[in-house]
Image 1 (cartoon, rainbow, N blue to C red):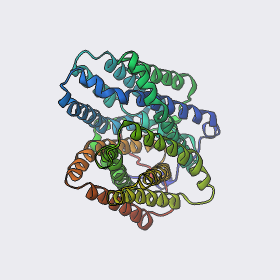
Image 2: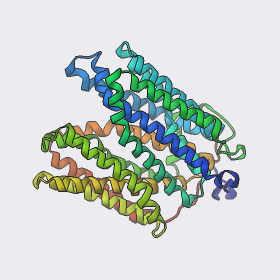
Image 3: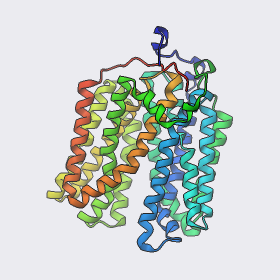
Image 4: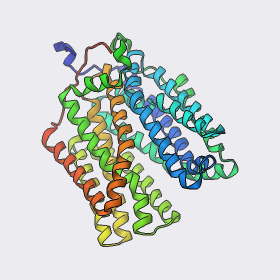
Length: 421
């Protein structure tokens, strides 16, 4: 990992690609299609799993499927990220999308529980579409433009969350496997768009030049990325953020059901509010704020909003109020919408183009680890005390805000890991 003086400089732009805004909107369209597809199948998972397990074991089966997928993603994402640094973003994105198509088709076919696990394993082992899309955006934009486009990506995901579940429920009433086949078709269409409409974003001279055994070693990529001090601090900050946010995401519906005795209709209405504010915060509020404030200020404001929302949930345990719950959701989703894109923008600026894939893969791998561990930890604390769980989440996010304000400067130079990968 020896860098020469000239390789410490941020990579130069690729004018031909970076002036092509329609290419970026194609990426946003791909994200929206994928999000709609994935949101369609979520309401059907308990029913699909219920065909092969007794009612009391369905929750265990779903948890096992999620854990298997997250574990495969944990090991595969950094490898695919590094391969995209070597061979380019486009081919890796196509492989990842193809893996998802095969996974959803197998899930729709079903026939046995092991087929469902095979489907999630294939999808998990080819997971890399999100990290590769982030790397593509990083290749194709100037650093100051990245938070805005990362925000648009998040808004596209929010659009999928709004319409996907209702469409999935409608299609599932026709045939239980139909939403999975439709999702596979949407992702296949995304693949066609990538193949025919997207140019390669990583120029050959910017790619890593060699493959070695360590290219397929997940932990060697972790070691390489975490050896960079500025990057390490950012990733630790991201872990804190995703833990606090994950507690909300994995527990909030259970909280409303247990503490407030809400049914599916009220919970569904609140989740619609989540989708609306996710779109508004990322696609409308964030671009406006970026014109007037620094990325660091916006990031800290986002973390403070998120901590305020988690604190309001804690307050609602002692002062039951629908208004407090609604305000909590608005603060949390808006805070997430402001911090997440600016964090990913700053993360993308911490390395040059030749390591964007590896960095984003490690970041996605860390999120997969969170998806495995946070639900278990949150469930244990929640069983003991719901108040303690949300107090813990609030403290974690406040610690992240302090860390961001105290230890991370406004701008970091891009690192280049001039190494064999």
